Image (cartoon, rainbow, N blue to C red):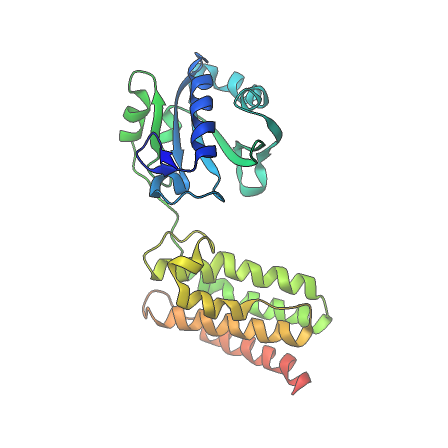
Length: 271
């Protein structure tokens, strides 16, 4: 381990990559600065961690920098593969895999002004003339919070739909639906209840170990009976977390009763 640019302890492979990457990026006059986010900010990086880097460019050069991303990424280390992040709704990100040792690095390319719109305050690793720091002062971090009414309005429809897939025997779709409920509903609510960032199920085992044990019951094998059990466990855990904050949303009680009754019909096949 060694001390990284923000003062946090970094595994040596990550620190070594950063030293080389920052040296190379400084040489590009189109770039204004580099910042780090994610687990870098908490000092919780370990050998399994990836690096989340934000690369800020001059506005006039941004289009050229975006087009040049593969070459820029290849200049930072022994690049094995890279692709853009449309699948996670972030086409500005270049997702990279380097080797010696294998290291996952996300490079998010933004204009210097765009860094003001963010979900967290990144650590500035290098900048020209304080411009990254100035841009960060222009805005405040805002991580999307779970919208409890949005969730409640959809949850029981999702339960019914997933139950129909159990009835039809489309169990891979059921497993996908259960994962969606964990990632979009149960995980964020569990993390939020423990004061953690509501980012899917990320680090749920350490942030909310008691709820993580209950969440384990929502994982199903490729078996119809077990899928029905896991869906019922998902509904029960959601109701527990919803009802722990009365008034946070208007419960859709008719939809809830109908969806749970339908799920009971599906489960009755094996009783």
